[in-house]
Image (cartoon, rainbow, N blue to C red; front, side, top):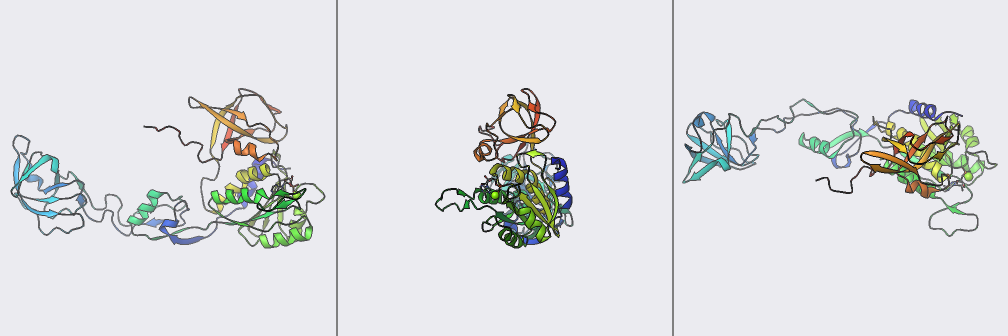
Length: 412
Ligand code: AMP
Ligand code: MG
C-alpha cells in the first residue's frame, strides 16, 4: 500500500503535456497557451485623443486660465476613424473626438469642458501640461513585445489582447480525450427500468461531468460485464484514448477482473491500493505513455480519487501550472472519528465566521453515500497517524466547488 503523497507524486512524475493545436480565438477561453505570443504591431497603432476636446499646440496656451482664456481658430473636426486633413499651427486648434488621430503639429488635448466655442473660434480656459490627454502609439503594447507567455490559462482580457494584436487563431494545448469505462453486472443506463439487483451506472455520469468541468473531453464507453474477457476487450478499446478511467472491479472480490485484464494487456501497474479513505483500492498504470486510472466502484471513492489524482494529471496534460485544488485552513467543529493508519478525506461543510472557517462532517462517510459529497463543500484532510480529529484541531480543507468563494451579497 502506497501513501497519498507518494501516489500523487508517482502519477505526476509519469505525466507529460499533450501537443498543441491551433484554434479560433473564441474557442480559446480557458485553454492553455502553447506558444509565446509576440505582437507584430503597436497598440494603439497611432497617437490618439483620450478625451472629446481640442487638439492644440501647448505653446499657445501658456497664459490660458478661466479669467483669461486663449482664443484659437477651429480648423477641422476629427472623428474617431478619420485621418486629419490639416496640421495644427500656431493660433489654431482642431476639434477632436475620443480615439481620433492626433493631427500633426498638436501636442496636447484640452477637454471640451474646459473650453467654449463660438463662431469658429474656441476659448481655452485651462493651461494643462504638454501632452495631456494624448494616448501615445504603442502605449499598451510595443511591436515585437511578448504579449502572453506560454502556459497561461487564457482569460477574457487575454482573448481581447490577442485580438488587438491581430491574432485570430492561437496555439493551445490539446484537451485530453478521456475514456470512461464502467464495470459491473449490476449496472444499467440511466433511463432503463431497474430489475432486481440492478443500479444505475451513475459513475459514468459523475466522471463525465468531472472530466468536462476539468476542460477535457469525456468519452463514455459501453458498460463492461464482470468477466475477464469482456473487461479485457473493453480496456483494449479504451486505451486508444489519451487517458482511461475505469470504475469498479479493482477490489478483492471474486469477480474483480480489472487488475488481471491490465496485466494481460501489458498495462504496467505502478501501484494498487493507497493508504486512504475513501478510495483505498485505487490502481494506476501506464500503457506506453498513456495513463490508466482504475478507480474504485463506490461512487464517492470514484469521484474523490478523480479530484485527488485524475484532475491534477489532466491539468498537467493540458500544460497547466496550477493543478492542485484550492486549500483553506479551518478548525474542526466537533470530534470526528477516523481510520488510524489511513489519510481520511472527510466530506465536510464549511461555516464561515469573521474570515475564519469551522468544519463539520456531512454525516455518513460511507463511500456509497454520494449525497454526502453532494452536500459537502470540501474534503477535510485527516492525517494517517490520528484515530480522531478532535474539536478545535486545525485542518486543511480541499475545495472542489468553484462557486465556493462567490458572494451572496453585493460587495458595493
Ligand atoms: P466494485 O468496486 O466493483 O466492487 O464496486 C463497489 C460498489 O460500487 C458496488 O456497490 C457497486 O455496485 C458500486 N458501483 C460500481 N460501479 C458503479 C457505477 N458505475 N455506478 C454506480 N455504482 C457503482
Ligand atoms: Mg464491481
